[in-house]
Image (cartoon, rainbow, N blue to C red; front, top):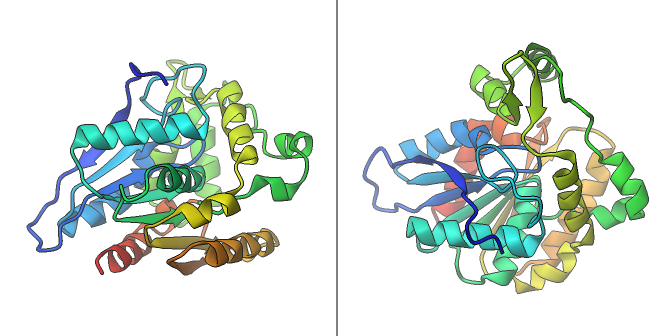
Length: 274
């Protein structure tokens, strides 16, 4: 483990006193960043809860070592940050890869969270897509190095016309803005592929029986053919987890936390507040 790695977090204090105060720790997905949680975090904070969102190693403003992108190391990163925050049994919320990270965290550190919330992740099983050689080609990210930032912004607005400017800017923070007006991803291609390989080697079905905490799965149904495989994977989670609820977000993007932040935050509060 890289004991000296610096991890960046964004934090929001609770804005009001509440009898049921609990801390929320938010974990982003692959090639994303903590800022994408801003609108969800604002709702949780306004409801009277302290919130923190992490830039996982290799992402955003955190350190970017060449190694340590396996689940053992990234879950240890989160464990160390939670200890430094001094939070006991927070609600852990992870999107996409971040959900699978929290699945691994729950299996490795049982009882450390009040509940686990998977946002279109936590159930992702890349082995079901085929051999690694095929999957690595299908999921290899495009080379965006040197792309003008305004073009990425225009593409995001075209693809997601309902996204707020806060959400657009948060997604643009997946990239380092260079002095010449172009961008490059904070997460390098080599590290991106290390994470994909770790995801491919993880079989969520083996981890489900190890989870003690109640789990909420927030899944996006965009109406595409991909939803068929997703529903099969969610069903496997339902069958494998001891305590689980599922909420489907209709016509939602994979980034539910950016696409429908208010609805997601309300769903999180309703589940965790019980």
